[in-house]
Image (cartoon, rainbow, N blue to C red; front, side):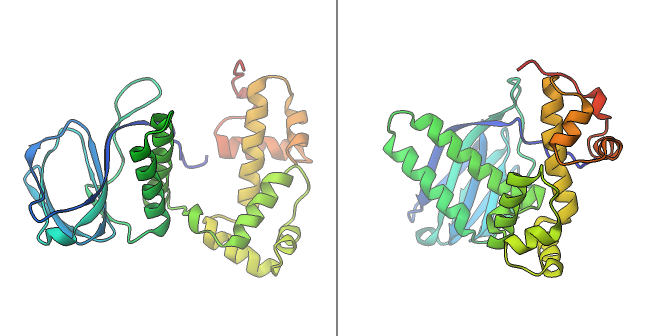
Length: 266
């Protein structure tokens, strides 16, 4: 059965405050309980936080994720040099219940140009406040959280995939119904099949065949949810020529046989 990667998929952030902070000599945060999640990405200088009595020293590239209810205080030993992006937000699931970020209090991301660019875009949205900016800011912030989760939790950094692998993935998702081979996809991106296979696994952490099967099985699951197709029709539509092989593979990846997939009213 495939690893559950949906833990964070139902989380919806509500952004209460955002700032691209460049500290002044007198900057500090007085000790107090916070009623939000504090996400702070350090982009320059140094800062010291005290959270629930424990001291955390951070510098460029570090990320704070301080949970709601914590007692927080902060001060920079070099205030004129301290710079960060800070977001205070709450996090709920689709059913309205509060949830938390599955991140440590302090971690090191390094100086991530893509993440900084995303934060700058959020800053632009937050400050201009054009009509619809609340929804746009939430969407941008969700992309930031997804970026952080990809690097720190899912361990699949799609932002930095080799351009040839990105093109290969596009080729797979557009033509997965066809009898694709690794040689065909390698040729489409001008790579030797052996080199392509090694590079694909290095970038995606899985083999070409496994990746292709997951794409096909996800499509199959969506078709089965409609209740409009039988198992043989689904298998054939998703690139499988052997319905028995498809059924075994589906159960291995999804944990249930294809005939047991619930129909969802769409």
